[in-house]
Length: 453
Ligand code: GAP
Image 1 (spheres, rainbow, N blue to C red):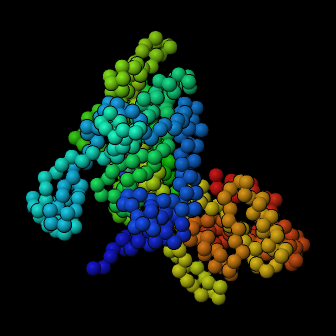
Image 2 (tube, helix red, strand yellow; image 1 turned 90 degrees about the vertical axis):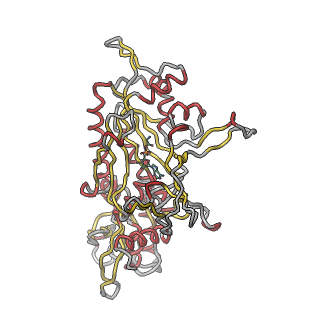
Image 3 (cartoon, rainbow, N blue to C red; image 1 turned 45 degrees about the horizontal axis):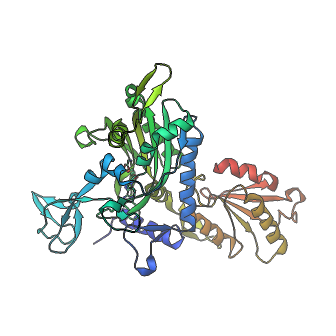
C-alpha cells in the first residue's frame, strides 16, 4: 500500500528528531516505554524556548498574573473533590481476537457493526470506564489510606492554593495564576509520536474574574492564545478555534474552545480554553470546608470568583513547531550542483541554536581564533554553536537541518587581508533566504538579539 504524503512527512520528522537529537524514545536501550519520551540536546532547548516565551507573555508582561510551581503529588482529597477520582475516565474496549486494548472512540463502526482497528475482529467487549490517573502510594505502607495519584493536570494545585496566592500577591480581580509543569495520564493508546503521551507538560493559566465578565474573558483569552501561536511561527491559517457544542462540554463549563492545529496526521487539539465557572473553587470549598472566596474592598461583597482557563500542552506545541518548521527545498552544493536541502524553518525566537559561528578554514589559526572570539562574544546573549569541521557548505546544511536561523562566517576579509575597510566584519547568513550580508563584529550582538527575541 502506498503511504500518503503526510504519513511519509511524519516519518521523516520522527527520523530527523532522533537523528539530530530532538526527541528519543524513553528507556530506548530496554525497548522503550510506551507513551514516554526524552528530549535530547536540541529538543530541550526548543522546549525551554517555548516555555520561557509562554512565561514571558503570560506572566512577566502582565501586571495581574503571577506564577506558582505546585507539587506533582497531592492529597488524595484533591482528586476526590475535583471529580477526577470518579469521572476522569475514558471508555475502553478489549478485542478478544488480538487482545488489543482500545479507546472506544477508536473502534471502527460500520453499519452498526463494531470492528477492531488492529485486526478487523468483531468480537469486542462492552465499553468499560478506565481511570486515566496513575495510582501510587505515599509512605511505607501500600494500602487504601496511602493512595494518591500523579497529577493529571496542573490546574488543581492552583485552585487549592488560590487563597494563599491571593493573600501574598494582593491582586484584585481579574487576576491570574500561571503554572508550567508535568502531568501524567495513563492513556489507553498513546500515539502520533509525542502527541498523546503518558507523561507530558502543561502550561496552564487560571484567570479569576467576576461572574458577569466570564464570557468576555473567555473571548479575550481565545484571541490572545491564537496570537501566541502566530508569534511562535504557526500561521493562523493552520490554527482552528473549535467551539465545543453544549452537549459535549463539561456540565459546569459555560463555554469551551479547542485550539486545533493541522498536524500531518490530521487536525488535532493543541490547547483548551474553557470558562469553568466557579465549579472548581466551589468543589474545594465544599470538600475542605475552607473559604476560597474573594472580598471586594469597594463593594464590600464576598463571593467565589469564576475562572477562565487557557490550558496548553508543551509537548504538543513542540511537535507542532517541528511539523510546521520541516521543509525540503533545493540548494547548490560545493560544486554548484542542486541538491535537496532539509531545513527546519523555526521562528528565530523558538530555534534551539540561534547562530552558528564558522571559521572559513579549520587550519588557519587566525580565522579560528577570531571565530572563537566571536562565539564567546555572543554566548552570554544566546545559544550559539561553534563549528570548524567540514566544507563550509556542509556546515551550513547541518545548521539548516536543525533550524539555526543565522550563521556568522569568519573569512579573509574579516582579517583585513583583501580590503582593509572590511577588517573586523563577518558575513551573516540567513537560513531561509540563504543570502549573506556583511556586518561589523561590533554590531553583531545588537543585530542578532533584536532578531531572536
Ligand atoms: N486543566 C484542563 C486540562 O487539563 P485538557 O484538555 O485535558 O485540559 C489540556 O488538557 C492540554 O494538555 C491539551 O490541550 C493538550 O495540549 C495537553 N494534553 C492533554 N493530554 C495530553 C497527552 N496525553 N499527551 C500530551 N499532551 C496532552
